[in-house]
Length: 489
Ligand SMILES: O=C(O)C1=C[C@@H](OP(=O)(O)O)[C@@H](O)[C@H](O)C1
Ligand SMILES: C=C(OP(=O)(O)O)C(=O)O
Image 1: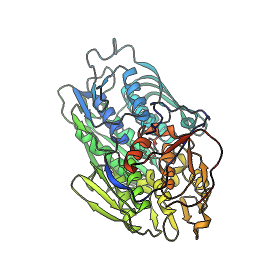
Image 2 (image 1 turned 60 degrees about the vertical axis):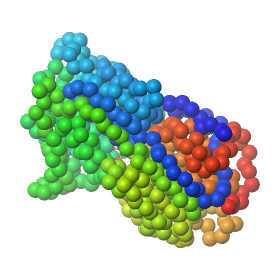
Image 3 (image 1 turned 90 degrees about the vertical axis):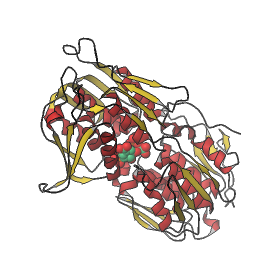
Image 4 (image 1 turned 45 degrees about the vertical axis):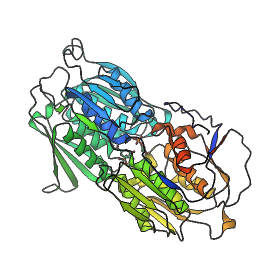
């Protein structure tokens, strides 16, 4: 069996000299447990690192996005130990002495966060509250991903300075902080919910040298205007509460233009810390699960994803509701969700809350009867790549008719089998581009995915796991010649 390219770190070079091709076959039948959730792993790492006492995170994700978080926390002096199997992470804040001479000499660190949005946004907020001198840098695309709204939210309550160095308010981020001053924060949420999540998780952090967190008395964080990706904020509340913080959601009595607010205070802790270490069990990644549910939908198969249910903390389990609308049967069990593929119809769907599954849905929509319209995801243009424009560009290469809109796209499959085309599809260093587009190969010949190793951002073993589920090997290679286009089984 061919192996998926290994390695944790994706380079941001333009060298795309390898491809993978999923080979068409019959219905996909089987079950799978995806790796741990990226979003939960990186939240738990933040809360655990700034907690009193030790934490044990089980079922954690090991991939580039969590690796850069772990490395950054280690670099600022936290104890983060990964066990041999790699799925359990022990975290401790060494407390006494935290940093030698912490009171007089704050931490200084240069932190590389590759292209991990959660890491740069959560750490920017957390380190500004913690205090010290930091510079956070990433790959070139990260220096085009906005963080200005977060920087602006922090500035008024910062004892120090914070600055986004690239045009348009993008990283590198420079922080020179003596911690937060007490006060209310205002943040915009129309570009990314990660700014709000970062501020919320930062609020209970005890500044270096302080006896207690700034929020001991309570901090209010107000969202001005639209808030995208709302389920991720609910996830933040859930994880923070698991680590002992007190969070109240305020949706009434707000001023005009304010959408929602969060009141955060630290629970009484003998140590003066805002978080309490704990054993925390991480769910499998629901965004990763979307590829396997989609495989069932596209192939008319039946795939069970273990470890996720309707009650999951991750909003992306809602992807199965969209598949159900398209005609699939969805079976919800206590600890699994099964999708049974049926004839598919196009849908009109707002995916604001589950935007990481837009690319998956777009590929499913290729095989539906009638057009699909995806709405509400203007913020997808700011992710690993422009996930509207670049997605449209690659889907067109297969023969589908795609209209790009400000807030999403419309996908109209070819009317006849002769309308399909084989193609070499670009992935733009975007793991979700690689994982989703590869699924077109379940039905179409000659769909080759360039630079498949970019899945290591969140799912290094994706193609190996897909191979196991399909029960047949993919084709791997580095040849540039195109195979002849025709529809597969
Ligand atoms: O908070 C999180 O863990 C995430 C929030 C989402 O980002 P946006 O809020 O920018 O949509 C999502 O796309 C990302 O993969 C993870
Ligand atoms: C958008 C994503 O990641 P991030 O913003 O955390 O880099 C993603 O994983 O799809």
